Amino acid sequence: MPKQPALFLDRDGVFIENRDSYVRSWEDVAFFPQALTALARIREIPYKIIVVTNQSAVGRGIISLETAVQLNDRILEVVREGNGRIDASYLCPAQPGTNDPCRKPRPGMLLQAAQEHNLDLSQSYMIGDALTDIQAGQAAGVKQAILLLTGRGTAQAALPKAAELPPFVTFANLSQALQHLFPQQA
Image 1 (cartoon, helix red, strand yellow):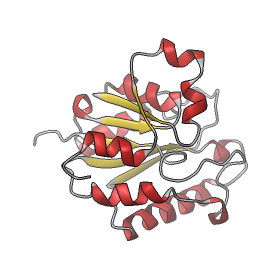
Image 2 (tube, helix red, strand yellow):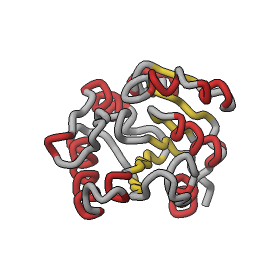
Image 3 (spheres, rainbow, N blue to C red):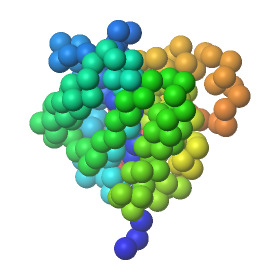
């Protein structure tokens, strides 16, 4: 069976707002309206659409893994209710500094998804709002890593480390990035 490309999406800062104190409950969830509309527009793309999200609040003991999974499931349910399609979701509960292979900037979640879904990483895209998203995509060998200026993206793009990474592109938000990648759908 031929391999399929994927569109990997970070979650916080990409289609929901980041929270400095973490997404701990449903009250902390705020969707970017343009993101929900954009996700609905690309519903028919011939790519797997996969969410890969670090959730260090679990590893830090702020929320339980069960709560993090329930919140993630509910967030994805709202995307689907808005006619968006998410084919799979991977959540890494590790906190920074643990060297856990699933925690971005390491590519573990992308590599696991590639194995489980028969993906062609060289034809895939990674979209996030942090340099760790860019690094994870590049480490996994994706075709293009994209930094959004929503969430933490503007501050991340200004960091000296951004200039040290292999080239990546930036867009103002998810809608603009998806319009660039899939103009026939936008």
